[in-house]
Length: 341
Image 1 (cartoon, one colour):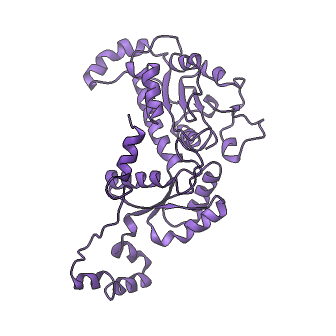
Image 2 (cartoon, one colour):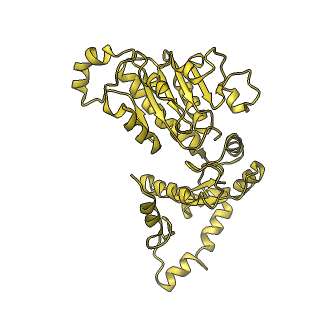
Image 3 (cartoon, helix red, strand yellow):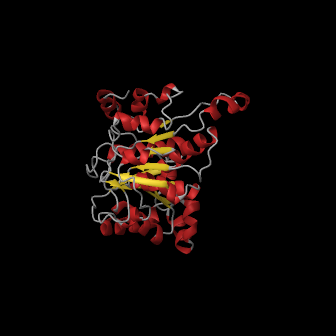
C-alpha cells in the first residue's frame, strides 16, 4: 500500500523530483567542454543543416520523447492543471528510462484550447524523435492525437488511448484461450466511453470482437445511435440494443471490462460480471475484496485459472476448465479518470 506520507517523502528526499539531465559524453576538461559547445558543436550543426537526417546521428533526438499534457485528465485527480500534472509526467519519464532506456522531456502545457495545444507541439517537432500524449480529456485529446499524427513527421502515441488497451487485450486473449472461447463469439460489455474505453474498444474490434457483440456504457447508460450527447468518437461504437442499462447488458455478457470511475457496479452487478452461470469463483484473486484492491491500484483483475505449466494445463483442460466453459470472463481494468475522460 502506498501511503501519502511515504509518497511525499519519496518525492522530496534529496534532490526534489524524480529526474535529472546528465551528459552522455565526457565533459570535464576545457577541451571536452569546447568539443561539446563552441566551437565543437558548429560542425555537427553544419552537417544537420545540409542533411536533417544527420540529427539522428549527431544528437539525442532519436532517443528522446516529448511526453506532453495539459493536466485536464490526470489519473485519480481529474482536471488539476499542468503544474499539478508534473509528478505524473516525471513518473512516466522514469518508466520510459527504466524499462526501455528512452529519454524523456516532460512538457506541461498551459493550453486547454486544442488549437493552441496542437500548434505548440507542432513547433516542438525538431526537438524530439516521438511524442507521447498523456492525461488530456476527451474528446479534445482524441482530436489532438488525430491532428498531430496527420501533421507530424515523427511517431505520435496517446498513452491513455493505447497502453491500457494493450494490457486489456492481453488479458482478454489469455482468458479466452484458457476457457476455449473464440473472440468472434463472445459478447463484450465495456463500462466507460472515455479515452481509455475508446482505445480498448478499438483494439478489441481489431482483434476480432464482432461489433454487434460489443456494448459500451457510460454514466447515462448504453452508448446508442439515438443519443444526442455523443461526440464523433463515441458514435463510432454506438450500438442499438434493448439493454439500455449496464445491469441489463451484463446478463448475457461473456466479458466485462471496466474503464470508468470506481464504484459503478453494485454488489449484484458485480456478481453478474463474475458469474454468468452463478457459480462461485474458482480463484481467490477474484473475490470482491482482492478485486477491489487491484482496481483501486489501477490494476487488472482477470477471472482465470492460472496455468502452472503446459503439461498440467493439458491434463486439466478437459476437466475443470471445460466444465466451466460457460463461466463469464471478468477482465476489469480501472483507471481513475472518470467517465468523461
